[in-house]
Length: 320
Image (spheres, rainbow, N blue to C red):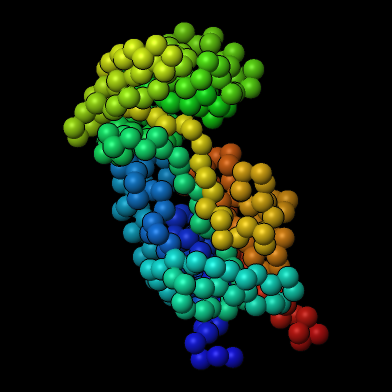
């Protein structure tokens, strides 16, 4: 084996709640995990100001602090947390085979097991005013952040099932929800469309886009554009929710790992096993339904346990 190639037992790709929880369990199982943080150390939670729904924080916690706590806990048991990006992989098809990974297009690693926890990236509109106020009233998760706007007026952008579901969720706790749909109809299922149109405090606007998010430090309003008439209108809101979809961070695994048509990794049954022996997936990279920190952490635990059992089964075969 080349001196330039490092061999490890467990490689964890991604450093959100799934990756760090997997690291905690893998380290306690003497798997000596190495975690590469990726481009966004800590994952999506580092852009979240307040986390009120993760167990164990009765007074809430800000996202970056929570991720530091998870990292410290993983390191306490011996996890190596490394800043770096896995830029290529070559995954083995053989039981007990070594999986190869390239770090930052240079360093080579061989791993007996791989846990993929690269997450999914929320899609945003790309407006400068929107980006400026992310964490100041602009959010991509109504279930995560909607509570902070209880009794207030908010807006949501999107026309699919996720947007419809989040709009009705917000309508239960907010005074008014303005829903912006870019086209002349919603893409959501008929049942979800009916739920939206029958909710009295949802103001549904078709052929409407965000022209600008108003506010300096926090969201104070929204300027909307009717893309048919060119007419602009301003409304006062305190929160803007973007629900135009997520993109799973799975590009480097395409052609090797089984995925659905949206790019989410397919896992077997109730496990975190992928189609490659010794390769497991946890968190938002394989979960397009819940996308919560606590569910990501749960699957991170599962992935580490699955990896530990996989290694044990390989060792038994070798000694048999």
